Image (cartoon, rainbow, N blue to C red; front, side, top):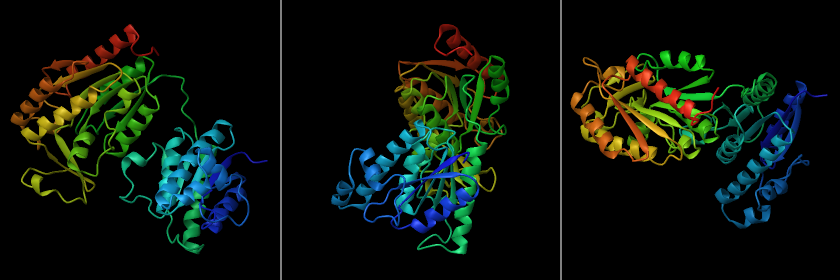
Length: 411
């Protein structure tokens, strides 16, 4: 008897040995295996549990249609659509407990789709020749995806690639055994923030919300954190969000790699989740430590946060543009939105003496926010800084009002 079953996915026509090696390592540890073939042209050495024909048909197409498309891209999209549908069906039937998917760029493209189709808490491992590569944007990553570089992973088994494959096999089975899925016993409030050197409101908000009976999940708005926040919001994982850190949107607008994808500030509204929002750190532009500062920003003060991250700030005219994008996105929400504007500052480094202190630019930003806020977005201005107690008090006041009126579910 096996305790946990792992779905092993890949192109069995070209990567049979590698996929079978992982399956053998899972079985050797007492796990079970279901195999899914996502090949198009060739056939596996022996039948898989779910054939390429079943995969294509699950997505409403066929292998012949994939071949006739004449495009590897379109063909793999057919297989990706089917793999997502079939994986969701098998999970709902309790057929597997975790998934491991193997591939180069083609297989990784499909793997990212399959992982995004599965809910938070289902172990998802991708063994890829392009793991951690800049070709993989934030919005393609599911909130709890795990990746390992498939080192030496082309054209057959070798001792180097076996190291990666065996680790992935053990990791996914171990995760399936150890995972503690979200309990769902308390409603969750999602909050975005940065560390306390820049933003401090979480230190008061978290215990206050927990005292009210809510679970609090805080996301680090440095690209991956915002991506996870948006992903969970899109699946209705929160009863309310306090989205107080908007730097990922500004980063997206200027091409910084530290962004959370095109859906930033949209998912909660689309899912009908009430939002209390503030433009924390929306004055800052974050760049990866290795990233060259674009020429248009090189005449500004640069704040070196650590070897991974450096920042500069938007000027007054640029901040007007970010304000318009911000309010336009909020205006698309299908649920109540309450915007708090702390007009004395939006992050610790914009206080007098800080690297981002620019009263003229802050004034321009606040002015544009007032002008561009959409009618359906309620706005409250505060004569305080975002890190002052008045800000957290107002956020809790709005939240309590929404709970009392039924906008937010009671804990």
